[in-house]
Length: 450
Image 1 (tube, rainbow, N blue to C red):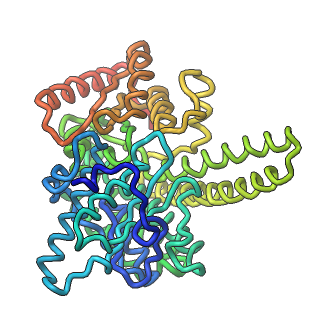
Image 2: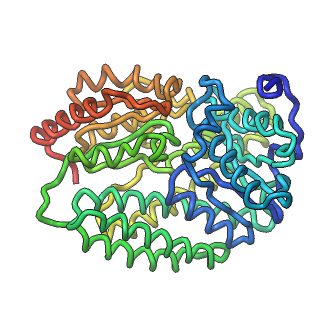
Image 3: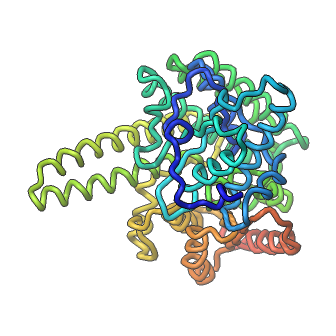
């Protein structure tokens, strides 16, 4: 345990960082079922042996090797990894070699603790002599999660484009499920179709992901959405529309948030969770903002090297952001022709909301930059309530609550905080029922957007 408690540990670049995958088994933590499985299928099209880890089965491992001070997603993902490795050791016996595995754990800059997950997990792995060769590869927000150094050079650009498509498809599939399931003609039909659809889309991506699969994917998506539209019972009246914002892992990982979306649906909601694409776009958008600030300072101080560096950064963040937003718009527009799922928004629009309100600033780079204007967008955009989902003691989400809660009270708009740490909160059902009652009253008074 001494190794786990060390804070000045110097990590080897061979076991953590931008690890080239090669022929290793690539382990992806399950954060969102649709997105992670579509991503894994896409990577397999590049001859990467990608696997999604079974999730929420290794909580005992996660709790054993954490102190409780860590962010809850760190515990969950660590437990998932250790559970999988234990299963592999039992399956392979003496043939097990930890050096054959690479675990994917991206990171971000501070102040969020997310930036330290993979370092801490490296310490835990190093406390087991037989796991010291298991490597952790990390993409980072500092370069917009570029896969450079992880994939072969000739596949860097195409792999990022294909991964972006998988993420957008995952967002569309999620919103398709949340749009149809509250109105389905027979219970279970939406989930059954969603499972089949995920398998069909994953098959297309695995076969064609490395070779510009957009047209093939969109044709398959058209058929899936048409099948889903036939499930909707048009006689069911519109239900209160509830937005979800917050920390990306907790609001996406249904086991960690105790299946919050289904609970809200059980009490009469139609839910729209913030997308995975929102975070990826924000990373590029924030990098672009910082590069522009650097350019202005370089021009003011007449420093040509700084100006040259800033222009390079502007292009490195701006071009991917433009591509991501165009792809997102194209796929969502195509999907919305078939079924009226909720559209996604541009990050620039969220910054405009904050500038106009004056309650927060994009100069404080945390998820609060997304959650606060996201909540305000819901309150003004035809929703009937919003839920803020986050790990217990999460600083950005606690900041969000402190800023938004009094504002929503003033606006008389239903708002609910739902922190999670793995424990069962005895008043959770009562709080959600009360919140949904308020949302129904809001729907009766104000209606909802289209």
